[in-house]
Length: 419
Ligand code: AMP
Image: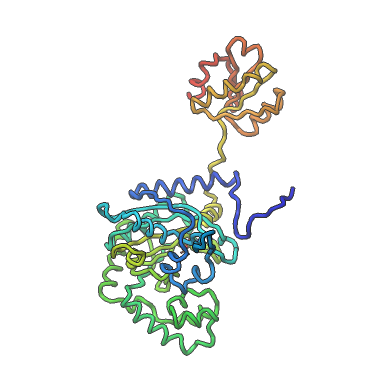
């Protein structure tokens, strides 16, 4: 069969043979977030485009090349959200969540949109999970956020991953560092890619994130941020590491982590799975101490992370971690004869009221076809309804795995199935 319509490039359908895996990963994420006392927040999938343009930085790739921007009927300019942090902070400020005591610990899941070149592990509509902890600059919070991510990945059973951390300093430090990068890269200007030549004057740190081979080679010997940190930044970073040790999160320091967006300060981190190929980041995050104020709130520090469900799914498939199966109904109902078929719904409904999952196929009428179907879906029980039995108020309960069967009063069915 070929459909008259195709799905948009860079998107995918989540079909039944995969959806149960999604459901599982999402559930593990939500449970882990709750274990750390994070509360769910849900924001719209589109926002004023300006929210992203200002917060992410006008020179970021997301804003420059990847935003799905559109104008609505009243001429307002919106964007499908490319990331979750700015919307969560917008909601935090707009709903005055800062007024409640303590740190606001929030988590989200949902689709994000980026007009990027699709490839394995990179899509135009993809699904992220993420957390944001807003209201504290304490290094403990940085470590706890990383520990939450680590716990989640561990609970999924993944082993092929690595945690890398870095400090990107504060605004003052970043200015000195940018200067050093300009001095370093300027003699190589003609060899850099077109984007990096612009980055050099606007946001030199982005040069370090460039994927072009030659730019990467030149960047190899570039100055590293860690050498420019002041006392406050160094102390913050050291404390994060100490707390990570206490949380038993293994990590390595990678001074090259810069993060693509403008709003990051202090701790930056990435979770990588090297077996995934080019798109090997399972997730990433960092501290954003200027963002809340920039979006119109008080000057409050924050930190968070986001990761993509697709790359987790790929990683889990690679490590063979899905032993679970698609939903299997407990009971397959077999109705033989016209009277039984005409009354089947009342018995099915009775079972479902008792929370017993039931499958019945009205288009199969013979005993053989229905028993074959029951075997195929691997349900535990078949309930056989015949015209005569129905008159007597009894049914046959067949234990499909054990090849045993008993006759029962309809009213006793649920107690047998549960036990
Ligand atoms: P970022 O906001 O770019 O740091 O992305 C955080 C995480 O989201 C990445 O580590 C990926 O796991 C995932 N991600 C980002 N962009 C995409 C994409 N286009 N397709 C699939 N996953 C993505």
